[in-house]
Amino acid sequence: MRDINQFTITEAVKQSFKTEEGSRLKFLLESFIEHLHDYTREVNLTHEEWMGILMFLYDCGKISTPERHEFILLSDVLGFSALVDMINTRGGATEGSNLGPFYLDDAPRFALGGDLGKGRDGAVLLVQGQVRDSLGNPIAGAVIDTWQADSAGTYPIQEQASGQDKFDLRGVFTTDADGKYWYTTVLPKPYTVPYDGPVGRLLRAGNRHAWRASHLHYIVRAQGYRAITTELFFENTDYIDNDAVFGVRRSLITKLEPVKKTDTLPPTDVAPNARCTFDFVLAPEG
Ligand SMILES: [Fe+2]
Image (cartoon, rainbow, N blue to C red; front, side, top):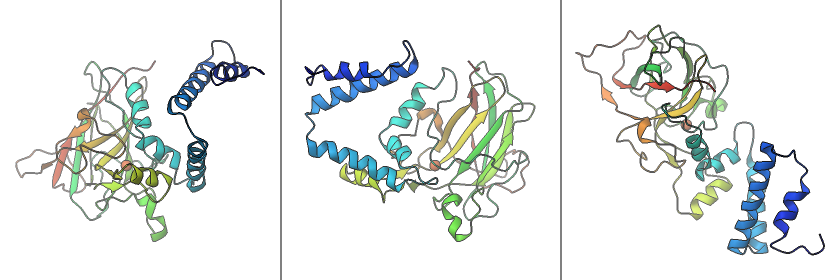
């Protein structure tokens, strides 16, 4: 390796890893090395810039906690998360969108028509729809796991210090025999992604804002189908055209409508004053 130079080093680094021939790891690693080296040569990276990148990553690690994952945020604002969601969406299935940093396992289960809002401030929103397969058949017993911000744009998990329950504004529902689901909650408002850390510095350096369009998060699962992680957005709301993490897709935007006296609504524990409808489509497993 004595004759190594800026062009032969890429092959030398690839060869230094003795990964299994034909394995996915070998493929991922070698492609990453090639792109990293190509980038470095292409931009003629200086020592200062190289150290700047490494210190930026160091700062991302330093500010991260189990509740705050700065690398996920970095991935989000670079469109990396959205790109992974896009390329992993199956044809015919509901498009995927950001998981975000606030998902929790074991959210409380609710009966259909239950209310996540628990009397919080804000419009009471009825969310209803159906879970179907890609041929249009209803999927009974599908599990809809949802979580969201409140009407001030805050997740209760962020407010545990002021006594909020981290499981508030999240719940699990199971579709009925017709694949239908419905529940009430508060209408969430936009919020900023955390911008007091290194990713915030990056956004400011690029003259970018940190706002997310208001949304509801979902993971929808059903036996024999591939689970989807996605978000639901609302037409004509702020930041719908410039979401800070590139989560919005046309197919994930729903219309908010006021509830009228003449509307026929499913039975709910709390009377809604706004409603929206969204159907989830799952592709078969495999
Ligand atoms: Fe979110």
